[in-house]
Amino acid sequence: MNNPLESARQQLANIQTILKIDPNIFERLLYPDRMIEVAVPVKMDDGTTKIFIGYRCQHNNARGPYKGGIRFHPGVTREEVMALSMWMTWKTAVVDIPLGGGKGGVIVDVKQLSQRELEALSRSYMQAIFPLVGKNQDVPAPDVSTDARIMGYMLDEYESLLGERAPGVITGKPLSIGGSLGRGYATAQGAFYILERAAEKLHLGKEASVLIQGFGNGGGHLARMLHKAGYKVVAIADSKTTVYRSEGLDVVEVDEHKRMTGDLKTCEGCEKLPIDAVLSLPADILVPAALENAIHAGNADTVQAKLIVEIANGPTTPEAEEMLLKKGITVVPDILANAGGVAVSYFEQVQNAMNYSWTEAEVNVKLKEKMETAFEAVWGEKERYTTSVRMGAYALAVRRVAQAMQDRGRM
Image (cartoon, rainbow, N blue to C red; front, side, top):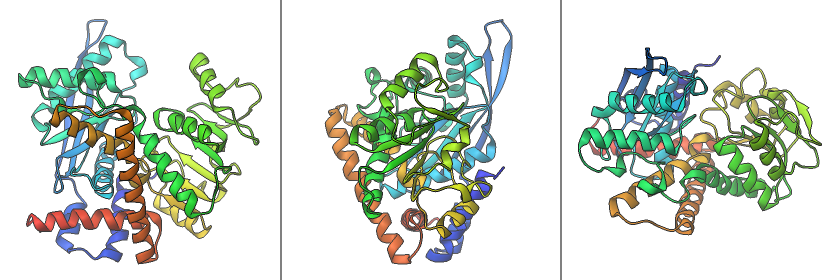
């Protein structure tokens, strides 16, 4: 399996051949400012104490406080967290918000925990990283298998330890304690705006067919948005199977079935296929919205889509992307396509600082402007350097971070 940290560093090395930023700055960007491993003790329901291993990586804060989600997943690794923190640095820079990059994770299968154990894990992790986070230092958010509820536990624990209110230390939290309207579906909403602009560049209309790998927060919301907008969603894959209908799925029906039964296997009128089949079916647009390394050298040749819009973090390996580009497939990278979540997280911080809330419509208007401005800037870099969309995004982001480091004297 491809190492995500190697992929992240290779992508940075690739853009360095174009940008040629100061070699000392380039060398610093290959490594995080800080990487910590913590023990996360949890008293289980049976009375025993179990130790989980957690991480928090702070990659770069030249443009602002570290920013990045916390994931609870059995597959979390040190290298994965380091790679994700680097990608967050580029993501915040590419959409031009004053934040840096960080990431956290705990090695755990939340399906094996009771509700009480999950809350205890969330609080224990916050206790472990408490000295390193703060609204002007490092601002966590939800990620894989974490949500607003868990962010609420973490915020409450942080404020208990601090002894005062500090809503800006956590984003993606419940509305009742300072969350932002629109944050729950912001990643998908931002991806929708990006997909629309990319499809326009490739002359793909709203009748375009779409494949979606992953039916969680990102992929699920986007599927519903695309269906409502008139796109033909022909396949959806969750963690168990792919459901396919060449004439288009009724996404509302599929979603309701998933909610009622927990899977897609018995979706009436759909063809049931293996999980990975979603990547190779005939369609105009492919949206990988699951975990990293979904598209790799072993399956890239089977991809038939004309456009790939990455909602997952790192779903395409560098080797796979080379193969896709040779086939004439356009790949809109994660650091642009899924930046809607961090953009609205920033809006949440701004609202917390002002102690004032925007309407949902106001949030989405600001998000649309932010995402479309970023897309045009990235496309401009792509054309400027006659390169891929990913390298265009990296050129824009890395140059912005390097400039901030230079202006701070971090050479």
